[in-house]
Length: 335
Image 1 (cartoon, rainbow, N blue to C red):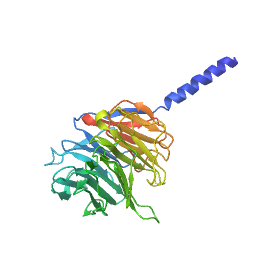
Image 2: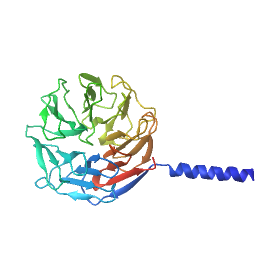
Image 3: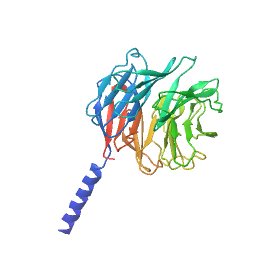
Image 4: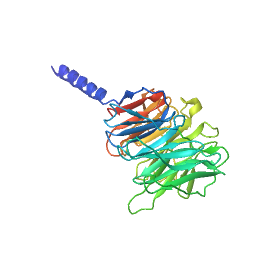
């Protein structure tokens, strides 16, 4: 009888472990666009953006997506999006002319709030903290292009940084997450961002640090940066031309980017996006799969071989969504 009880307990424990395994559920794949912009307002409101002028919105936690037309931008690539609620969002079109558009009526109409036709202009990512935001673009005259806003993207002011980038050093527009804007009560604000290419650096206000990430080619370097609001940074990247290579594809910092270490078990390939789920739990994705870490990024477990470009957690909630090529949108569960 005792052996039977032990066996039953083992079975129940195994079922519990199995039930807790993270799973990826595809919600929509009805469009062929490559989706790299993702903003999750709460557990119900989700916005995505991407190639061929694609923008979509869900009001019911991803059960249904409404695909929105942006007249005149059918051939543009919206690599990043920031949504403030179910009706208000800004989208970023990458190349000449670089454009940021805003809607206040759920995508029925769009207003141009920023435009720059400077030769070589290429916007890469946006980050917002409440009504304040920042956009970063590839270097012009060896300096990163940065513009800031304090009114949810209604108006933008250029903010030229002092840092000089090396030849072949730029920023990846792979997931809209290589820059972080942070305002914390009682502390000075900061803008942190990570570069890639022939060189890969971490920048925090006036601080510049070489990242221990694979670099040296156009396809290498840091792609994404996550911050846990307690001095902790995680960056991921690798070589997107060899997306199963795990060489120097992740680095961790516990002192606001002054020093960096490598994880004990890295993500299982090139990764274009990383984000915190909790203070200790993270998720990262790329074209060769999805990994989760439960110990602050020191060890990563591959949970899926599916390809995604971007992953984000709800700003006000617990839902985690992913987006990628061929219009694929998914939700994480069981984490």
